Amino acid sequence: MNKFLFTMLILTINLFGLDKIKVGVLAFGTVNWELDVIKTNGLDKKYNFDLEVVKLASKNATSIAFQSKSVDVFVTDWIWVNTQRERGNDFTYYPYSKANGTLYVPIDSKAKTLLDLSGKNIGVAGGPVDKTWLLLRAYSKLKYNKDLIDIVKPTFAAPPILMKKVLDGSLDGAINFWHFNAKLKAKGAKEFIDISNVFEELGVHSSIPMIGWTFRVEDIQKNEKLYKSFILATHEAKELLLSSNKEWERLKPLMNVKDEKTFEALKEGYKLGIVKELNEKSKKDLSKVFNILLKEGGERLMGSSKYLQDETFWNFKK
Image (cartoon, rainbow, N blue to C red; front, side, top):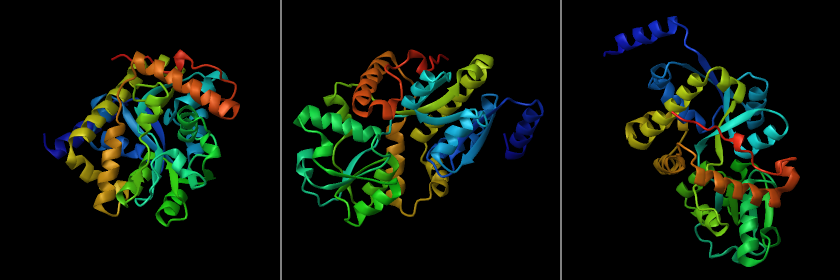
């Protein structure tokens, strides 16, 4: 089918008024990559819906837009969803990515264990209740019988600032989000601790998807076919990102990368984070993670939530 006929087909389909899904995203966030694959390849039309991407200025803006029903879907972590459910908001979650943050240090760092970082200045993105920071604190207590907060000197700051400070040597390391770590890796920093090893030590043996697509249950109940179609389109987009270098080359301008090393590091990190389902074993492990984070972060992180609700996760079936 040539481009003209394809365009005419799409226009004809639009005349019938496809149901629209509005997805709220950070204007320059990595979620845009997958959504761009859906739009550019016509996957929304293939699955009989119209995707509208609503770009917003901050993480708070995306959650506010969702709660005010200005958008239908956004990406957040399951802890937020569970806390909202505890407050009476009937939201549910479907996994988007298992890409987790971890600790990176300068390439010339001689430290081998967390104890070797004693007295060192370590940056933490996300604040005192950042999930990776709390997991590393739990890991440190278990492995060394010492809280990480008593080993290092934490500095809480925004992710770009922490990345810059690791590179210029004013920090001895930083716990940052995966895409900032990918950029650090491209510039010569190194991963200090594999977060999967942290999970294993804590008794969690599955790949944990910390963030996911978040929906209102009432919307799914009104039009389950529409929201299932959205998930199926995301699955196909992920398959393209796993298999097509051409698709990544097309995305390069959107990724705002200035060199090939950074591009490859971001591509690799994104692929490693791809997840398309949440099985029962993963749900059990998520309950373990919830209990660890509840113990470490308390009410400041979890609000009044004392347990992980089954309904926090959408029981999606094709």
